[in-house]
Length: 403
Image (cartoon, rainbow, N blue to C red; front, side, top):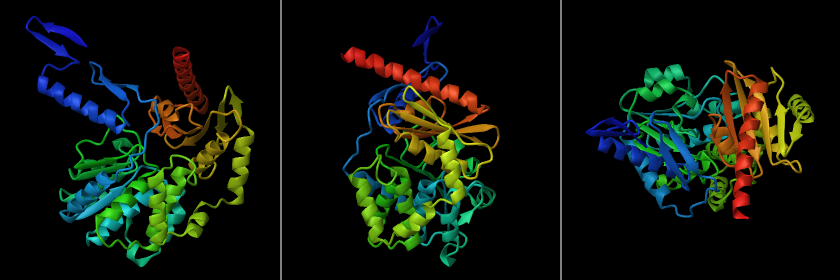
């Protein structure tokens, strides 16, 4: 895409330097591969990336060579660091906190001071957080973003788990306080990636970040002795993201789960963590009874002020997509700061990851989500329906071409 700038010079995509263009091309290739391949990345003149393709399912890779190499690289980075900090995305879920606990074990095994940065909105994982904090060895494990900023320096190693977008992290400011950053994630790569990490371990075909961290633990050192609550936290993360091993589950997922069970993961604790109170059950029934279904798309709304709205929304979206003739289910809920959250689920024909990506979110083909700022519930619904219909139209056109 070229525009004439002067008789003796031509600017391509807003850049005149060939080396800079080559670096941009390499970055685009990394971005496409990080999103699972099967696509092209095109940069417009203003530097905005556009994605073409990427409609097929991610294929699980059976080789563990990369996991072994990454585990050794992580060990070297931890060993040469003064302190280790770990954070996931804001409004943590069990995959985020479980992966953070697993990484914390790596640091503790080498005798390094380690802390997990948590947000002020930890309702979804409060039960697990309390169980971990009650143990003397984990007394000071969880810290706030403000405390993390005071502890972080150039010798600090910062792990970011279950997200790779700077604005979605618990403490975006901490990213600027150290250049020693490691990213471990299982979501398809977005254009707004954390800049210049020392190490990136991103597997879009993996069920969860907890699965990735569990594999790293197995190659981290010869003897890995997880505490019961650590193994349980990792196991809970896998359970949540696979919906009890029903979606996004491969051979390596079961291998990781069996390793955690051998390490002491307790399904009874997991069941207790996920148990619902009677009030939540009534709210879920109320949300589902008011859902609207049209053309294979189910829409539901969490009433304002409902406790644990994000958890309820995810549970309702899971239920909606199990209804006959429903191809995709979306549950909407209100967040702070004039923001609307969306939990999206699909049976597979509609790629909700692409739908949510069009709205600034992301996830996987069958499980995704987004947060829409400055929108009302009605406005958010309109945008989601528009994005879904656009994808359905595109899928229909492809079927006609094949026919």
